[in-house]
Length: 109
Image 1 (spheres, rainbow, N blue to C red):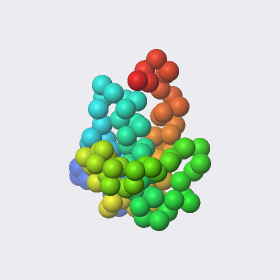
Image 2 (cartoon, rainbow, N blue to C red; image 1 turned 60 degrees about the vertical axis):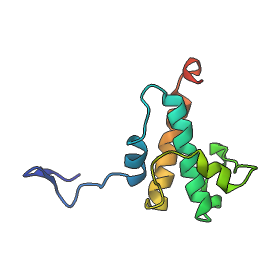
Image 3 (cartoon, rainbow, N blue to C red; image 1 turned 45 degrees about the horizontal axis):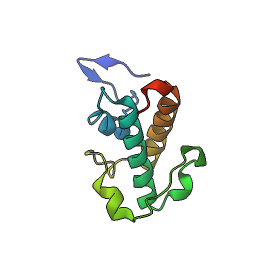
Image 4 (cartoon, rainbow, N blue to C red; image 1 turned 120 degrees about the horizontal axis):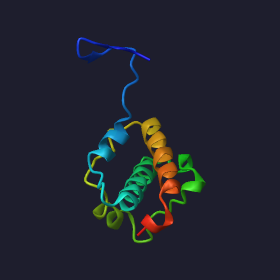
């Protein structure tokens, strides 16, 4: 791991996951379950739109909207994941999938 020198992170420090940074900026701490599902959907939707549908793990249970991409786009988070790398999106999706499994049943609404 890198070190912090003069208030800056050295070149060797791992850069943050751009997708998680974008998702975090729109996260609702009062609705972890809703935020998690919405962000996970957006990750999958972004991958699917890029033609990377085969990269989305089946255990994420992503299904495209039966009403087409336009209806899905209207309900997506306010953050833009398009600039994020596919690698960052897949890692963010894994984090979100783990988080969803950890949220207690009584907090899922």
